[in-house]
Amino acid sequence: PPPPLLLLVCTLTNMGIVDKIKEIELEMARTQKNKATNYHLGLLKAKLAKLRTELLEPAKGQGGAGEGFDVKKYGDARVAMIGFPSVGKSTLLSTVTDTESKDAAYEFTTLTCIPGVIHYKETKIQLLDLPGIIEGAAHGLGRGREVIAVAKGADLILMVLDAAKERGNKHREILERELHTVGIRLNREPPDIYFKKKPGGGVKFNSTVKLTKLGPEPAKVVNKILKEYKIHNCEIVFREDCNVDDLIDVIEGNRKFIRCLYVYNKVDLTTIEHMDGLARREHTLPISCSYTLGLDYLLSKIWEYLGLVRVYTKKKGRPPSFDEPIVLTKGRGGYTVESACNQVHRELLMNFKFASVWGSSTKHTPQRCGLKHVLADEDVLQIVAKTSEEQRKDKNYGDKVQAFYDDWHKAKKKKQKLKT
Figure 1 (cartoon, one colour):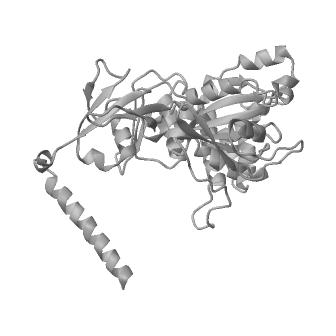
Figure 2 (spheres, one colour; figure 1 turned 90 degrees about the horizontal axis):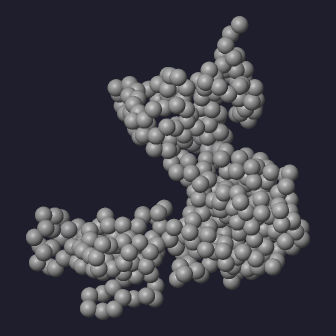
Figure 3 (cartoon, helix red, strand yellow; figure 1 turned 90 degrees about the vertical axis):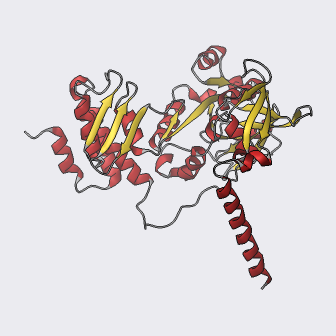
């Protein structure tokens, strides 16, 4: 008889995308997981990921962007609340921010995205109250795609759950599955795999560690998955022991790796034993908005998961300014001196000479540092620019002068056109 993969390919030829996805998922459920089936399961996962990408991202020329929530980014970081209807998201927003969000005893009270601002430790954190989603949101049910699209641009996801309804309903697993389907990876780091397409030369496969999760023949599995994506010329290097899912994430290139904090609300309606079991789970925090229990600890955990770093500036011969710090994040340029310069003004990098840093990131204070120095929370930074004489000695000084003149000339032409 023909192999099962050949039978599956023949069955999928005359099906729609949704039917194909269901057929592959059924085949994966029927297949036993062991070393002998790693190769077969790897190909099925590659086909499944490719079909899901086609389903979620329509082909070019099939219409413009769909309806979504147009929310302007504000503050130093963005936190998105995701959860089922009537779990307390609107109440939480109204409690920890100055924004009033409508809350009621019925489901789907919030029909659009409502932003609020958390003022915490001299920073401004934007908190988004998104409409409740249901199972099947990844495929567009209940405006699920619009909600998840906003979550993709967040620095942190707050998955708000009802502690009283969680027992037996598995709401947490359902939401994790919906987010995983659209390419959001929660509390994970990107796989350490180097992948680069090339115009020729075939597939160059290598690894710096022993690969135990790709079966007895890793090279065969990798080549077959690349063939499924019609990639015949590339260079790929595994720097850690990764599985098939990690490889597919790297090939797809559109995955979002976001920190997530699971917040169980309404713990006042459940037993102490159940609450204790929830609190012991990883990345989990029980709260009660009705009795304002655990909200201070929630804010501290949001701060910890965002990884915000405050840097205070100082002018030469003057004391530091502790009014409005520069706030650095890992996802918005990192914690280096270069990132701090970009936040103040981009032209600082053009004339940068060195930086004097006071704080826990230095061995002695003040320490003279370069652009790649990594800053710590509550460091004091003083940027020293080159003098006019030192700027003239630069090799690219002529290019800078020419670029300045070109910009000035363009601005002058625009003014003349406006006058006419």
